[in-house]
Image 1 (cartoon, rainbow, N blue to C red):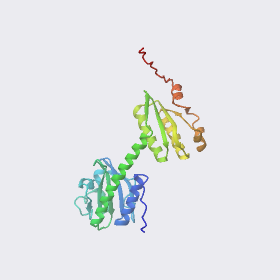
Image 2 (image 1 turned 120 degrees about the horizontal axis):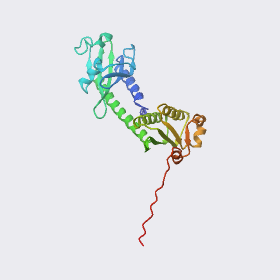
Image 3 (image 1 turned 135 degrees about the vertical axis):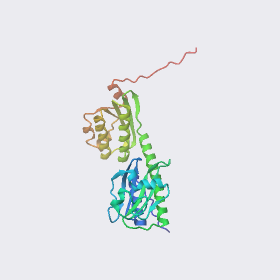
Amino acid sequence: MHNTKPMKNFGDFDEAATYILQLLSKQIGINSLFIAKNDGQINNILKVHNTNKKLVEEGSSMPLIQSYCSLSINHGASPLIIDDVSKNELTRSMEITKNYGQGTFVGVPVYYSDNTIYGTICGLDDQYHKLSEEDLYTFEVMSTLLTYVLELEKANQQIQTLTAPIVPITKGVAIVPVIGEITAARAEVIIKHILEKCSNEHMDYLIIDVSGIVQINTVVGEYLLKLVGILKIIGVTPVITGIQPFMALKVPHFAAALKDVLIEANLEAALKKLGFVLIKECKEKPDFR
């Protein structure tokens, strides 16, 4: 009977990127491996794995045109390999080469599913590093894997956003029903989505209905309080509806922290407080007698 290694599950793109670089490092052995994202102008180094020397710094950025990554993108989907950056005609006169001196560079573009460029996955060494055909193939495979992870994360964010849709009530007033189980990751997505919408739609009041939340903990409670605080800062008045007793029990300071926030039992009460009245339209059935 064979022991099957469990499939690796990634929480997000950041976690997948870290794992992929570690895997590449073990297999290929090049000193520095990194994943960069660019917007067509600036190249940002998002994730780095340095083995011996710190050749690449995580979080650094530079104009894309001045980076080796731009050469990889211009080269196309197949891996670009430069045995010695100090001698190759593409790199020897580049400013960045003065910092590294000699050494090997390899890079492969990372695409979104629609074939637009996300960035690159690259390797760099200040010594000559021989790369086999298998090594280059591995780079291509990892680039494809990153594309899948990007699309999965994008789809997941869309799903999480859809479970907290912002519904306009009238000009300047909207409601966001928060439904289901709230995790820290989902809370981050919801907050970002809400703030973008509020800024674009010029909201005055946002009614946050939490009656559909099935589970809450201290971390999630903090995110909700964070959302309320940020809304106030940007000039949007938050109104909370649907707070359940179990929320106060799970997060004891939750209610106390909301003492300066307008809280109502339900949507109808909240709208009434804001000066709106829900009117049920009744139509009598025609009398055909």
